Length: 395
Ligand code: FAD
Image (tube, rainbow, N blue to C red; front, side, top):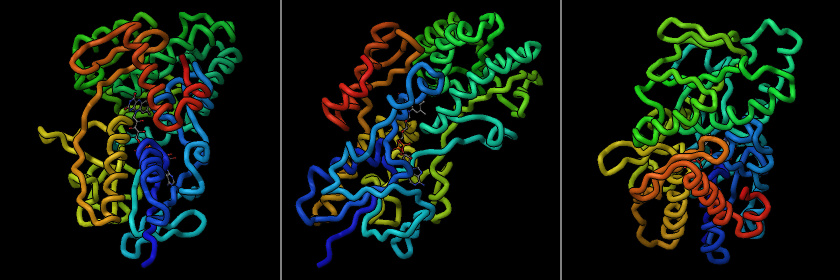
């Protein structure tokens, strides 16, 4: 009989870890595996807030895909998928099509703007290498422009929408970058303003309140102004209007307030919630016994019946089970149930500062910051071994 074809869409956390697992465990001629990704590199999303603020180089947040996978075992196709056709088991790419017997969807998320007018058009998003290079250049350009038009102090106001993990980690870096930019462009630091605006009643909703308080104090001391329990009502090229009626003028709005699944899932006819597929226990899409869905494209429910927040951590754990289940399915063996085992969460607050929960322990300050580095290095080790740790690791 014919060798089954596995197509993996997206080489993010979910896709790359699935590919590595298959590469290691499939026997010769047991399946053909094709990995499809928009770019020829994998990006380390959890690191993107740094190059976005300009505190690190974009190159440190990406790895060439062919350095991670063995091309004699896995075919890599650099292309953008445009349509998933479950009816004839085909993927339409920008150039050509691919047929599959088994599909893994790991296309990641897209910004969710909750229909707030103007956000889609005027706000920037921290999502990819391209987007963070743009944000970094945009921020520097505002300083250069201000020197030509010194009455326009709003050019030095930076608004971050959303005080979840991404928003908090980004304002920490941004605040760290400001003194350097002020020096470079001869700008009085007192003119710079950073706002972090959040609609929920607290920053980092769901996180330990004592640590949230600590984080906000660290960031306030670095110059961040919080507006919590304050919704953004509209975004324009000139700034934002808040639900309170207040207007904040700014040429830079960075939206981190929400993530939804890839738009292709809805278009393919899957049942979705905010663009995500609520997967079965074995990570397959309901009604499709040959389609696995991972990471930001999927919803996994906790035992309490609430969706887990989409993270790199859960994506990687899903990928391990997905790889296992694909191999079992091909061999006619039983599939495993996915159970999320949270290992802890650490959010960085800029240089030398972080907060986190590891096991049941609360950590903060330098200890948490060191832990964050260990988590990042561990990931590099998982996907690329010691050589990658030495090449891309930040110690
Ligand atoms: P992704 O990692 O997003 O990968 C999707 C891949 O699909 C990408 O390579 C993309 O190029 C590709 N792709 C997309 N569309 C197409 C297409 N049409 N055709 C072909 N390829 C396509 N999580 C944590 O656990 N810890 C953290 O500390 C943390 N920090 C974060 C900090 C920031 C700034 C951000 C933005 C996120 C952070 N997250 C963190 C969340 C985490 O990054 C995501 O949950 C995770 O990346 C989701 O993994 P994924 O495999 O679903 O998709």
